[in-house]
Image (cartoon, rainbow, N blue to C red; front, side, top):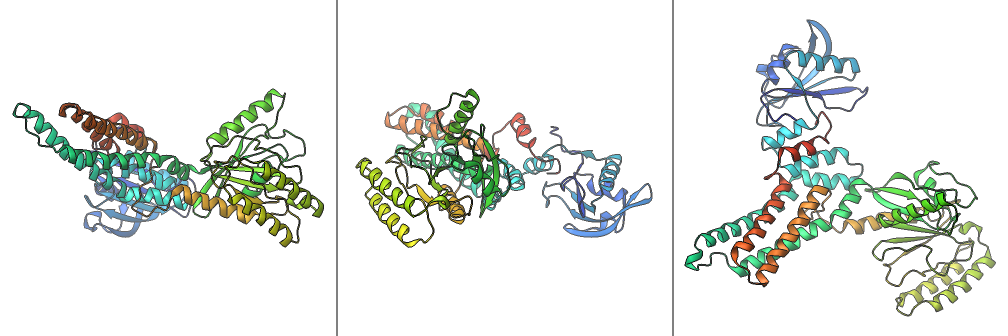
Amino acid sequence: MSTSFSDTICAISTPAGVGGIAVIRVSGPGAPEIVNRIWKGKPVTDMLSHTAHLGEILDNGALLDQAVVTIFRAPKSFTGEDVMEIAVHGSKYVQRRLLQLLVDNGCRLAEAGEFTRRAFANGKMDLAQAEAVADVIASNSKAAHQLAAQQMKGTYSARLNQLHDKLLELASLLELELDFSEEDVEFASRKQLRSIACEVHDEVTRMYKSFSAGAAIKEGIPVAIVGPTNAGKSSLLNLLLGEDRAIVSDIHGTTRDTIDGLLNIGDYQFRIIDTAGLRDTSDPIEAIGIDRSRRALDHAAIAILILDASQPLPATLPVSISDDTPLILLLNKTDLLDESIAESRQTTLSATLNSLPTEIPSTLNSVATSISERLDALSTKFADLLKHCHPRLIDPRIIPFSVKTNLGLNTLQTTLVDIADTLRGNADEDTIIVTNLRHAENLKAASAATQAILDGLDANLPGDLIAQDLRATIHHLSAITGTITTPAILSTIFSRFCIGK
């Protein structure tokens, strides 16, 4: 990407295709003059900044289209340069021809992200805010948009700058101390240095650890549906997505690979992943699918274990689930149960509960009571609820369910949102959740550097060694906001933007 901003660029800023209105953006020192050459209406030189004007676009003297031109004069514009936005009708021909007219009169077609890169270069935003612009455009849920908007607003950068300034002051004092090392003078209080290093370490560590939740919210929270064959996994996927994405049949092993789809519930987008049924098999292809199922579960933020409530319930979980992965246990096919089966399941439940390790919380006994009460209270026939998970598993949610009748669907959707709220935390607008991998890597490195500072202070290391780790911390924080960066990094970041932004 060119690093010279002496020229004027143009691009279509609205989505590709036909629409009512299309907007072509022009930015650079020559923007007013170039637009004026193809404009019939109030002279651009007479237009005040931040005003819109109706006129016509001329193509070699002939009318191309009616248009509205909005002008933003430097430095009070998105890029910090003279910017003009031309709104025309959404005809593809009009858009292409207008771009050609602009190029013929002195514009250059913008590269990906070049408008935002110019805004960064002209000090209108820092690098973290610039990256947030792309995240706002790409956001597919309210939660993802809120995180990106918070970062674009500068809350995140402001906190990083506060930490950076504290470290920079201490680094300056340590450097001064080194200059007067023969004088045996201490400019930087070791107690103060430890206090600030602890504050920075705790904050950057919390930030980088928030990345897993932040990335899940940004990309779609991965939810793995796992369970034995014929338990209803593919039917559940189809029900949630409202379309036949997965093949459903009574043949065991029908699903042999992971199938996923995106679903918006409340403020969140979920990526629902159907997996191959878990069972022992001699079929090598099915075995590969089962292995992929387990890998999908390893990377899931939420696990849905679905069991066939009309069949004998297993004595143990059919799959290993991490202790810190929120689990929803669906007892499916409750529409197949009758009174006798319900009674049989209650007996099975009691036997299973008695065989569980004593470390399981005593609240499990209340589950048995609630099951009995529920079976007595409900006129329809459902499955017994079984809480036979690993003793350390965090509060599994148990939901009687029926894909056929939609029983439990609202409860499942509400539960998914509740878990997503927990993953996000009770965050107010000042709580920072990291969604960018580049930021997370720098924060992790800063965490390691601050830990080295604390270890060095504990070991009473000399100031020059501590100063090295202090400078490393400052470097990693500066790399996030773009105070320290390279052209290669900038090109990589802005190449991911759309052309008109």
